[in-house]
Length: 364
Image (tube, rainbow, N blue to C red; front, side, top):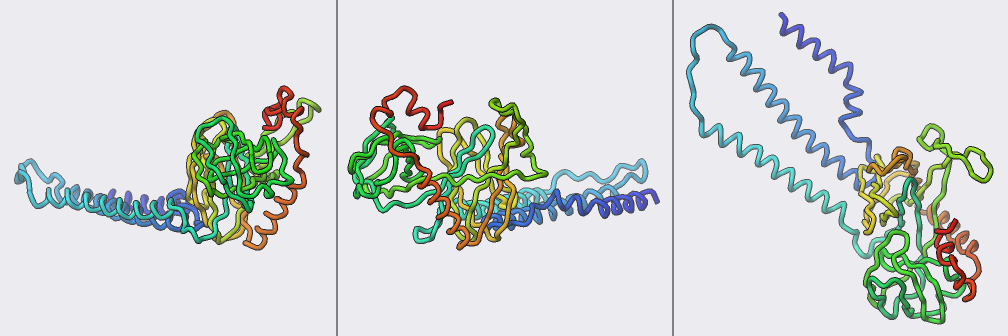
């Protein structure tokens, strides 16, 4: 009687909490191709674990009821069973090996770069305490004519077509070779002087023929009620309270996006729950992740690695647009960035104390 009452109580408790338990046990609906693969892998592991759990619990209940004490007589003693020992050793080993193989295949698929002929949009992500910055690029019709030496503090490279740099301003133009950002400090015909490894990237060796990308800022912001963006600070100039808005990164749907992740200070983690995929942002290196968003909309993201006092407020929003809308937005941001570029810095201004630091955004 007591056993029946206990079983009914457990069943009712599971029924009442099924919705809450489901929300906690299962990941959200994926909004990316990589997320679909990860969710499918999760469900495979969950089903296997559930079957093992039910089988083990059923065996325990059966043994407890079947072999419960019925008197003082000693039961028949059994000393080992080779067949059973082989089964309970081989079965878990087979399950673990199968799950390892499936997991390896999924991770290899989502962490591998797409084919060379596939279109990829690149977004450079810079994490710093406690916000995010997003930069985009425009491929210039120019390549490196001479390789840039690895590790140099500043270097001179030559380009295949000097005309591609007309109108770009020293100390305000940032270019990218592969994943490395370089700030242009001087332009003299086809000889371009650059500062190496800016914005958290790492100096690398670049071969002749490497394409050059022009970098421009694509970070937008918005105040979103209800989110943890309500960090109120005081403007020292006016004494007024200011709410720090949420940074927005804009991406296209149905096109693979490569996020190049770099940190300016400590370890962060770039995470959007509905993509079911995150990657650490480590100072001193650039990590890349590929995401193909399947549905337009707004998706909340956050830093998933404790990084200091305002870690909980280090949030961002992913805005996914249809490809045509995204291209129009990108060209608009590019035009605005080029139009807002300051005039070239003269040699006298460049030699002034603190000029390079202010141009790099490090000044007061």
